[in-house]
Amino acid sequence: MTVPAPGRHAVTKARGRLPLAGLVRYEGLMLLRRPSSLVVVALIALVLLIGFTDTPRHGAAAVAGWANLLMYVVPIGVGVLLSDRLVRERDEGLGDLLNSTPVPPWRRAVVVVAGSFAGPYTLVAGTLLAIGAVHSVLDGGPEAFGAALLLAVAMILPGLLVATAVASLLALLMPLPAARVLLVAFWLWACMLNPNVIPIPSTTGTLLSPLGEYVAISVGGERSYQGLGLAPLSPDVTAGTAALSAAALVLAALALMAAALVMVNRNRLAAGYRWE
Image (tube, rainbow, N blue to C red; front, side, top):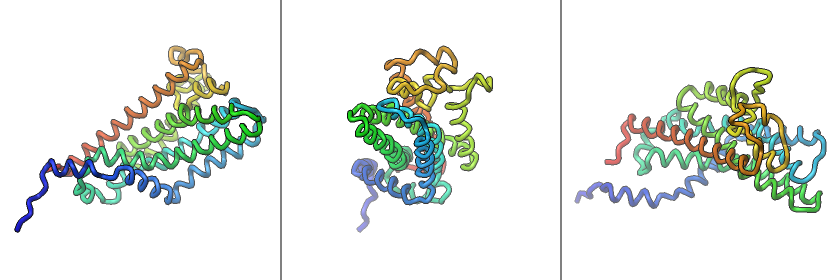
C-alpha cells in the first residue's frame, strides 16, 4: 500500500511543531564549543585589564565607563565570530540536506542568528552586570547595578545587534575574510573616526553611532566623541535622545538583518528549495 506524500497543510502543521527554542539552544551551545569563541573572552579580559588601570570612579559613572570600554572593541570580536553563521551551510555543503527539512530558509536563518547571538551577548552583558554588582557592594547602594542593567539593554544590546547584522550581511556579499576585515573598518569608521582629525563624514559622536554613547552619557556622564559628529545628528544628550539613539540602532540592525534574510531566502530558492 502506497502512503501518500504529506500535503502543504501537513507540512505547515509539522513546521509549527518545530522545537524552535531547542534549536536556538543548540546553536548557542555549538557556538560556545568553537575555539574561536575565545576571541570574545580575550577581548573582555583585555578591557578588564585596561579598566583596572583607569582612575577609580563610583556608581553609575563607573559602570558607564566600563560599558564604553567594552563597546570600543568587544562588538568587533562578536561580529567576526558570528559572521559565518548564515554562510556556514553553503561553505560546508549542507544546502541539499537543509532543503529537505520543513523549515523556510528565513526561519532557519533567524534561529541560527538568535541562538548564536545569545551566547556572546549573555557573556558581555553578564560581565557588565557583575561589574555593577561589585560597585554596588563597594558603594553601599544599588545605583551601579541599576545602571549596569539599563546599559546592558539600551547600549550593549543595540551595539552588538548592529555588529552582528553588518557582519552577517557582508559575509553574504563577499568572501568571509574580506567581510571580517570590512567589519573592523566599519566599526572604526562608525564609532571612533574623529572628524576633527580625519575630515570624513561618519556616524561617530551622533545618535547613529553603534558605540551607544548617548546612552552612556545619559546614565553615567561618560563622554568621548559625542558632539563631534554632524550637527543635525548630534543633539544635546537627554533621556529622550538616548532612547531615540537606542531605538534607531535596533531598527537599523533589524533592517540590515532583514536584508540578509532576504538574501538567504533568495539563495535557497535559487538552489531549488520548494515547499511542494
